[in-house]
Amino acid sequence: MAKHEVTAIFDIGKTNKKFFLFDDDLNEISREYTRLEQIEDEDGFPSEDLKTLEKWMKDCMDKTLANPDLKVKHLNFSTYGASLVHLDKNNAVASSFYNYLKEFPEDLLEEFLEKNGGLRDFAINSSSPVMGMLNSGLQLYYLKYRKPEIFKNIKHSLHFPQYLSFLYSGKMVSDYTSLGCHTGLWNFKKQEYHQWMHDENIYPLLPKLVPSNSCFSTQIGGQTIDVGVGVHDSSSALIPYLNVSPEPFMLISTGTWSICMNYFNNEPLTKSELDKDCLTYMRMDGRSIKASRLFLGEEHKEQIRALYAHFNLSMGYYKKLTFEPEVYLKAKSHEGKKFRFKYLQPEAFGITQAAQNDYTIFETFEEAYYRFLIELCELQVASANLAIGNSGVEKIYIDGGFSSNIMFVSILGLMMPNCRIFITDFALGTALGAALLVSNRKIEPGFLASKYNTKMHEPVSLSHL
Image (cartoon, rainbow, N blue to C red; front, top):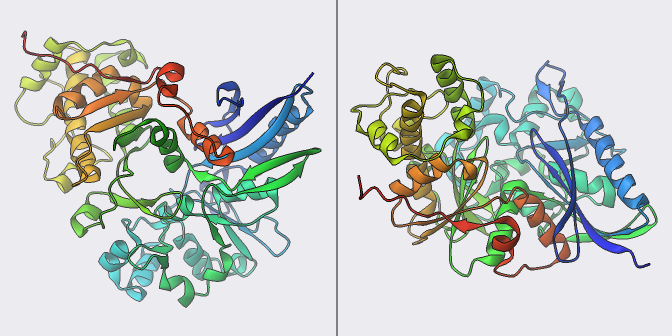
């Protein structure tokens, strides 16, 4: 009996670690997932447990390779970005796997910026706000000057997706999507590695740069497998939509972050856009993508906890709600802002916020929650418009956690009446994108609609009220 050929994908998020198998028609045939406890780096800061992650991945692959009915044809990896794995001369991990949320010493950042033209020039040239460890290339500068004993043992620095690929292919490379994830390593104006990399003699630590659809034929467990070089998850999420949409679109990928990615806008960033958390990602071939970000999911989590506490409700209550136009209009009618954001900065967009949260005028949780979403969506619209720019995009896909929040989608639609919004049950966009890259396959226009219930959101009508 012939074996079924499959494409295996590891999709490694900050919280959930997933392993997918796709058949030859790119249908998902199995998935496994796990959550791993974090460990601490040498400074006591939470860090991904690479050893445990690698063991889980090995167990997944060993089980798949041992299945007599399956033949693994392709293997690829999508992961979160802004993370580097440092290796020594023996290709062993040479340092902690530093969390991008780890604080970057303020005095060291000032010193770095003073050497490199100041905050504005560096941000413009690297097409990203200056964010410390989130500019993952600066981790190398940090190690050089604050942890020289570690730095002197580093022979290679790999972006996270490429490190996972290296574990299976034995090949060290960098890919464009990982390099373009606000690393501070790339000069977008000159389209080359930033000069500071050469000045600090850090450039030799980075492997050669290759397109994101590159792969290496590798023997694993007695099978010949095309191993992809890995891809940054936000960029990977775009790929299925690029396959099926005949017209320009923007993707709002939601979760902890809401990231608006416009593949059809490669305009250079302005200083004003940088102040509003706009940045440039890189396409699989190295060209630019205009993007904007909001810490939307984390803000939502913070505010919903406070609302549950105030109204004495259990976690998850909001997920049972449906959109009610009457409640929306009542929540909208209140004058002045009622919410104070913890993480978001509406003032950067010229939008006001309350001095503190004020729940006193709300009779119900529903009314308060709608009002919060109204104020949140005002920011989301402002952020989305930055990514749209002058591209004329009128089609928007929303995927991730907020695509199933009908109140959020409905309010966003009311605030963007000239756009058609599409929502999806598509929970594996990054994995499918990685599968498309490594298999060099395309999907038909109706694929997402038939397999993952991708559909246009029906605009809400308020005319009858």
